[in-house]
Amino acid sequence: MPIEPREVAEHFTERFGQSAGWIVRSPGRVNLIGEHTDYNDGFVLPLAIDRAIWIALRPRDDRRVVVHSINYDQTGEFALEAITDEKAGWIEYLKGTAWSLQESGHELAGWEGVLAGDVPMGAGLAASAALELATARAFAAVNDLDWDAAGMARLAQRAENQWIGVNCGIMDQLIAAAGRAGHALLIDCRSLATRPVPFPVGVAVVVLDTSTRRGLVDSAYNERRRQCESAADFFKVRALRDVGLDLFQQSAAGLDETAQRRALHVITENDRTLQAVEAMHRGEVSALGVLMNKSHESLRDDYEVSSDALNAMVECAQAHDACYGARMTGAGFGGCAVALIDAEAADNFAKQTAAAYKQKTGQTPSVYVCQATDGAEVITV
Ligand code: GLA
Image 1 (cartoon, rainbow, N blue to C red):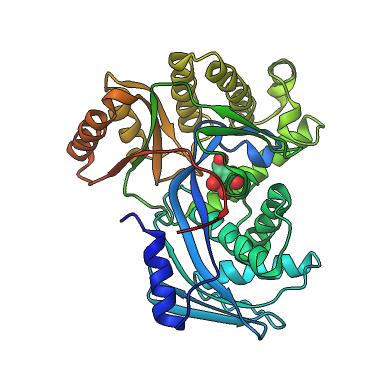
Image 2: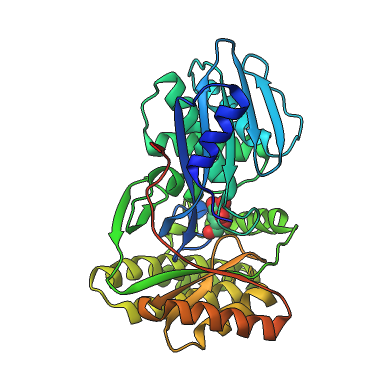
């Protein structure tokens, strides 16, 4: 269910007896193309979406953080001078972010807040990065910190890597921090330079949630990372970003067959992502769609991170006349696909694709047309 920020503010007033000082909003994301390239220092092209996490908050006099989650109907709290990892669910994302900010030298004051979100968890839409950046925004508001999007994204990534223990790249945190309304963001994951790329007129981005979730994503993800790192060592480069198709073709025969396919995905995906940016600039929507379809094939066959449900969803989407292209999005193994659609037919596409997927798999999906929004921000209601 979509969340109204006003309701979060009202809930705050009821619970804490005063109005909130700020409301922060931090979005989920969908990645248009550039999958499993971020931890190879490569290129990604995500957009921040109109599914987000909101926190209404006000400062406290002590150094405690007290937060009520509407979604979980639970209150979590911790003291900033003694943050400990208790593996206590959603509050760990807030603790990890506070820990990371303090580790980087920020002196933090505490706050109390009410939290709510409508980014589905575990669906490949980066709900955890949204929560980390919402927390960073909240601390930035209370402590008057400068909002340096790339710096905050790095701190949030550190929270995810070292507090939560998920060895992710920078894409999710950086798009949550730096998204731009009406645009996708080309991110160079080595330099962290970002370039907003406007959407061509007349296209809609549709998120297709298969309703499947896979628990083993983390171990498979870490295994892919290791395979990429050893392939980079084999080619004697810092990361697979530094390997072009020529070098691959000259010397890949020395790698085992699986490692070759993993590397080939990353090398071709980086290339497709840069081509996608050019296609968007030229308004060549069909070319962009073809690149998305090829990305899916590469993720399915070479990188092997798709799933039966994702493949079924992508096939149903691609079969619709209004679809320019479709692919799985995010880490994979379950969760969401993304499709690029002729905007005029978006509603018909959503209905028909949902029905076709249900008929094929027996699962009931969620399908919605999304808008590209700004990254983490303080909003007024
Ligand atoms: C997850 C990670 C990202 C990225 C994608 C795959 O979303 O958090 O860093 O690696 O998977 O592209």
